[in-house]
Image (tube, rainbow, N blue to C red; front, side, top):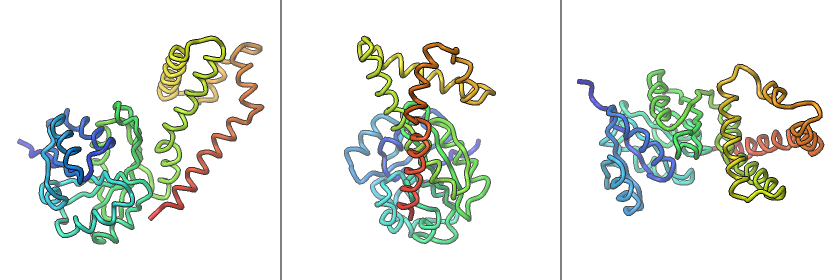
Length: 267
């Protein structure tokens, strides 16, 4: 009988809970967790098959894979406390934005096997998107493990680390941009006589359906747009306003600004 993979979480906030929820459905994993907020840890342990640990060191001694699910400013302190329990057999995965694999290796050891992940909040509903990149010591098997773990709460893509700022800008920050657009669409519908709740439902389901079509179709988004745009029709009238207001340029500048800020925050 194959031994279960022991997964340890340091931090049990929203992203960690999304992963824990997905992984708890698999018989392959045994889950451990630590949180500096004892009540938060107790709540998670009460709702999921998670074995609570009393310290960061206990997570290190209990787990094969350690997932750092803390704030970026906490990473250095957590790694300092974890360092003495790290073994060559450990795989370290961080979901902290802007923390490079190089920085984590400097805080632990040049031999530490590290994977960096950039997930997003739709993981909470099982529809997350996670970008992954490997540290210098991480193996192909380590990456396959990380892909399996994060696939429990959505989809994954493996990138080079130099591409992680772009991924942060597109998918890490992307849900906020989608919510911004949904709010604008709903307010537009409300201004046209719809109840806000009805307008938001129409907009949300339409965005979900359009995104699903884009992922399943062999056509580009531009081609799909063309397919639903009748010359002289309502869609064309709306798109004409978006062109005049340079919405496409604004969105591209939005992504560029987020990527630039990600580079500024990098450690």
